[in-house]
Image (cartoon, rainbow over all chains, first blue to last red; front, top):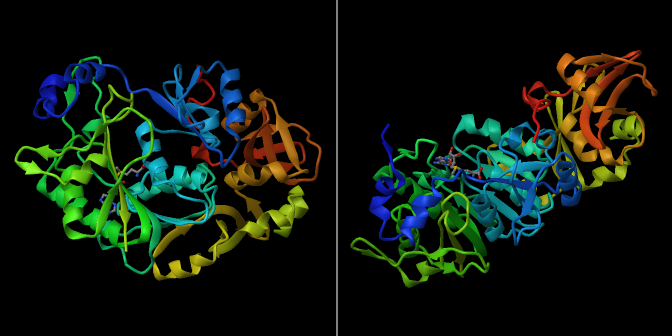
Amino acid sequence: MASLTPEAYFAPFSQIIPDFVAFCRKLSDPLPVHLRMNTLKAPVSETRLHLEEQGALLVKEDPFDFVYRAVNISQPGHLLEFSLGLLHSQALSSVLAAFVLGPEPDETVLDLCAAPGSKTSLLAQLMQNKGIIVANDRNPDRLIPLKANLKRLGVTNTVITRYPGQTFPKRFFFDRVLVDVPCSAEGTLRAGPSGTLRQSTQASKKLTRLQRDLLLMAFDLLKVGGTLVYSTCTYSPDENEGVVQFLLETRPAEIQPIAMDLPHSPGLQQWKETSYDASIKYCWRIYPQQIDTVGFFMAKVGKGS
Amino acid sequence: MEFFRRRFGIPGAIFSNYYLYRRGRTAWLVNKDIRLQDLALLQVKSIGMPLLRWLGPHLKPTSVALQLLGAHANKNIVTLTSAQLRDLVERREIKTEFAGTPGYVIVVSTSLIIGCALHLPGRLISQFPRYMFTSQTWEYVL
Ligand SMILES: C[S@@+](CC[C@H](N)C(=O)[O-])C[C@H]1O[C@@H](n2cnc3c(N)ncnc32)[C@H](O)[C@@H]1O
């Protein structure tokens, strides 16, 4: 597996990444640890107090009152509070995707690519364990951590299925759908002490075809008037704007603005020879020099009549 | 739910928001929602959270269920110091007298609900799943 400097690794995207120098510099910092307090088990204030009594330094991440950056906790999985499901270690970008989907307590929600369940369990928290979530993942091995996380976090409104998302049966339609697709995942890369990055999965035609199929099925499973979020942790336009463009060309989908006030870049209007629909500017690209978390892409999609 | 009321004093009304499903020896707790019927059209792999298991004639609550519902309990609660809890987890059993009748108890430590243990005369036997804690849970300092 090749190891490259951030500059070399991301050179193909240097034209689209804002402040490329700051971006590359940021990749030498370790990824911060974010803790999402699980209000299904205890109020935020109680869990926070427990941690602070042990000396934890916690910084609240606005606008979320349940997310804290843990300044001096490097391995939250060893905390007793983690074992008891009082908190979950979750990247801020992952929190954002679930938050932007914005499920209400009594709605029906599909999480089409759900394992290991970080977003599913946050959706359950936002829904106060009410309504119904169907958490689907095609990979049997990944259903094990999915089940374990939902159990640990006290989720009782979720049903688990194991369909290939692209052939999920059209028998039940949902108020909201999250489609957090498998992707080339370079948003998760940070340079270690070596200062270099290890190659992640390559974007391929096969992968973008799967992402398109997953998004189309997710849209077809959405009720009229419903909301869908498509998300990836890659910077690749082919896996992001390209997939959303395909949806707009094949379905009556509408890209909606994301009503949050956080640093981000708009979705691209052009990549190489390809132009994208004007509404794709409402999508969010998040780079680590803007929000110190996993690099991320989100599209909020509505389904009109 | 009579079991939870009798053993722990958890009011039956707590369960009015849930359906209970039995599958094999396990009962599952799932949020009450009429639309779940429609999901019978899907091949469901699991539903809700495990609540209790039938062990012969006995009912054994899961630790995760006690963590979620234990705040409503008023009896058969055992409070341990951090050191006692660590012993219980590492040795799976501690020897001390506790008040209350033999049977399953809710273990609490540093005001956190930890989970389920079996209280026999002079002994407390851990029922926490082995994977619940990591090898470093007790060493981990900030
Ligand atoms: C980015 S991860 C999802 C992370 C998850 N949403 C979370 O927040 O914890 C993508 C997931 O898609 C699953 N997956 C891959 N191909 C799939 C398919 N065809 N249908 C459904 N799930 C699929 C993978 O097993 C993987 O768990």
